[in-house]
Length: 154
Image (cartoon, rainbow, N blue to C red):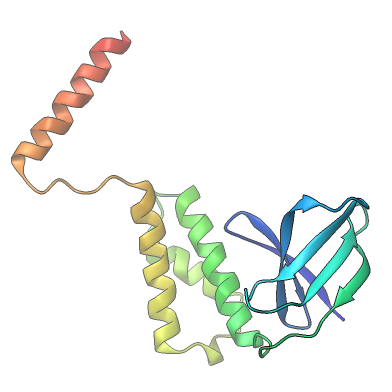
């Protein structure tokens, strides 16, 4: 049984037999950490000792199909490129995309996957950058606010 860790939305995940588990935020009274399947209707869980991540108890009876390797790769690449675009806003999104997909098997990548990954890049970038002004009045308001903020900090 292979275990892997990855971060998604700044949260730690475990992947065991192509099923994703998320960490529950509270500790059990025994000091163990509980992990639940990321599919909300699934009752599968793990319990681990936090220091060495040794599994102490598990119920791996899932009521859904496992995630394919292709789907896992797409999710991983999407997470990597979204983090990269928020850390380095000066790099072109297309360059970030190309660097992100060069590490995966692209023969399984479909046009819709490429479109979704690029849309996620642009959405992540849009969240951290202010919107473009739509009129001259908006530009003037922004400049006035910047000027006022600059004068008050002096």
